[in-house]
Length: 105
Image (tube, rainbow, N blue to C red):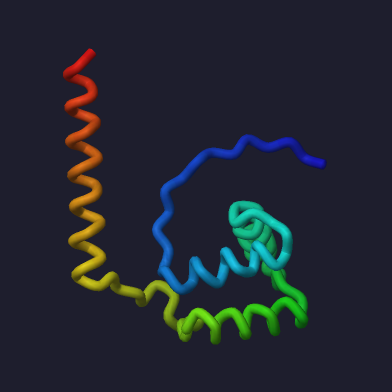
């Protein structure tokens, strides 16, 4: 077993993709973080992360969650205007809270 240091991160993912990943992690009795670490470590070594039965499970989950994206869509995704507006508003609100919190001390 290898000891590591993990950090919390705020990564934005496509909603349907996230749903499939969460469902797969639950099926594998794993956390989302552990699943993502495994996928990335396999990819870094040029290896396939999933067995044929797991790929079949993923195909079913993609149907359930309406995920029609493929590897060809990678680096081509553009956020909807509504999502960009919401994300910007959240960042502005969070920055405002941070500033007001600092002024109180």
